[in-house]
Image 1 (cartoon, rainbow, N blue to C red):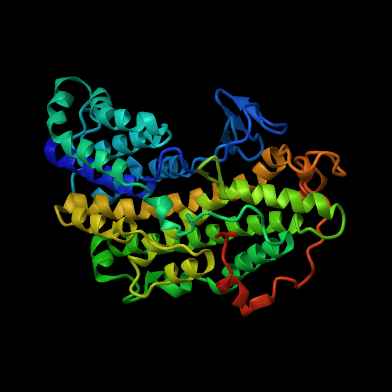
Image 2: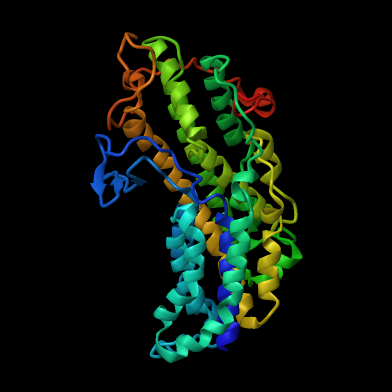
Length: 439
C-alpha cells in the first residue's frame, strides 16, 4: 500500500509540475524594494488590506506559485474522503500517524510543492531533492522512512521538468523580440480593449451548454473523461469549468478597465501615453521575467487546453489562441493523458484522478480571480510609482498618477475612451491584431 500511495503522490506531483513548470524566475514583475503607498509590509511581501492580494516586496505576482497554492486548497482530504466513501472504498484510519491511503500523501505532496513553486531557479533543483525528506518528516518515524525508496520517481520527474526550457512560458507563442517603441499608444489601447470585449462576446459558455436538468449532457465529455468520474463528479467538473471561464473573462475585464483609463486622449493625454507604454511593457516582461498580463494569458491558455482535452467538442483553445496568440505546448496538450493513466491503476486512484481534475478547475477559477484583482491593485500602487517620461514633462516623472486614483473606488480619474470605440461585436480587429508590438 505504501508503494502505491507514494506512486500516487509522484503522479500528482508530475501533474502539478506540468501545470507550473516554467523558468522559476518567470511570472514576476520587478519594481522596487519598498512597499508602495496603499500596501502593508508583511514579512518579505506587500499586502493589500482590502482584497488580501499579496505581492512580493518588489511587486511580484508569481503565477506558478499562486496556482499551486490554489490547487493545494482545492485538492483537500475531505473531498477525497467523501468521494472514496461514495465509491465504497476505504478512507484510511485518521488515528494512525502514517496515512493508510494515497489521499493524505497526495495532499502532503501538494502542500510541499506549493511552497517549492515559489523558490528561485538556483534553489529549485535542491528543493526537489528535498521533497522526499520533507515528506518523510511529515509522515514521521520509521514507517515514513520505509516509504522513501518509492520516492525516486518524484525526484527523477522533478529533475526532468526543470530541464524543460519554458513549459508554460512557451505556451504563449509571443517570445520574440519586440520593438523598442510602440507604434501608437492609442492603437495599442484600442487593440487590447477589442480583445477583451471580443472574448466576453464570443466565449459565452453557460451551464446549460454542458448540463440538462442538473445532469451532464450525453457526450459532452470525452469517453475517457467520463470514465474517470461518476455523474455527480462530472456535474461538479463541468459547473466549475463554466465558473472558471467566467472568472477568466472577469480577469480580462479588469485589463480593459485599466487600458480604457489610460487611453491617451483628453485630460493629461501625454502622461497617459507614457504611463500606458510603461505599464504594458512591465505587464509583458521586465528584466527577462514574465509580467502580469503575460502570466494571465499563459494561465488562460493553460485552462483552455486542459478543459478542451476533456470535452468532446472543444470550446476554448481555438478562440484563446486567436485572441491572445497563445499556442499549446506539447506537454500541456498531453496533460490529460497523465490523469487517465493514473485513474486506470486502481479504483482508489481513479477517485484520486477525478478529484484532481475537479480541483484543477477550481484552482484555475481562484487563480483568475486573484490575478484580476492583482491587475487593479498593482495599477493603484506599483503602477502609480512608475517613473517614466522626459525630465520637465508636465506632471512630473510619475505619469500614471495623472490617470489613476490612489486606492479610490472610482479607480480612473478621467476616462476618455470613446463610446463604442472598440468596434463592437465584429471581432475582426481583435482576432487579427497582435498582442505585443514585435519585430
